[in-house]
Length: 104
Length: 164
Image: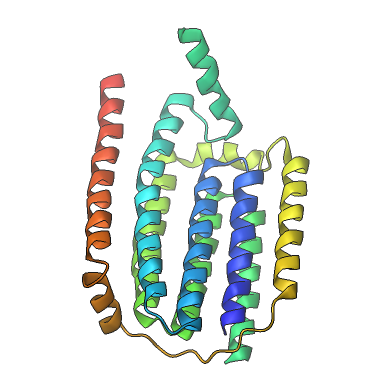
């Protein structure tokens, strides 16, 4: 069972990384970040199950809280980006730098 | 048990492939929700029933609903524009990097001996004792962090109103 959990964690890690590296949409970026957090969570739980220790579950609970804490401002920022730039394209975020240079 | 585990792994892989290939963000979020449901079953099989419940309550009940609300707020035309171009412009370099990562991880896993350990359930009582005993100050720190996050979101939206 622990091997299967680790394989699932590797799967989640690669899909999360692929989403962040290759997809254009900011929404898929954040989904990828969530998948990465879940991969870390699964590894912590597998470690806890392997050594019959509760600290794995404590760590997993903290990771869960951190991922929620990271997501809420990110989604607020996403709405802000959509309103300011009119796009959710990751490449469109370069406009921020150009705008900054124009302001200077 | 092992058979069930493999079955879950196959379903998880299919759902994650769907997340990679689906173009509409709404469909992607639904696929991730199903994948997290599979993960909750996996948590239960790993002997963490409380965390399986938390996964459903927190991820499916709060985080993915937050995603769906955001998608509804950004409107269908932005989603359609995002779906028109789905991969980034420099994707061959990224794909190469991912391939290198995958090979490194495969080489790492290949050398390991199989992990043989019986999984015992560790219940919520133990978790509560650990959280409010030795890890009390960490729990408090996380509570403060979550409080600060509310403030951060409020500050972001307060700036938006001034801008208008």
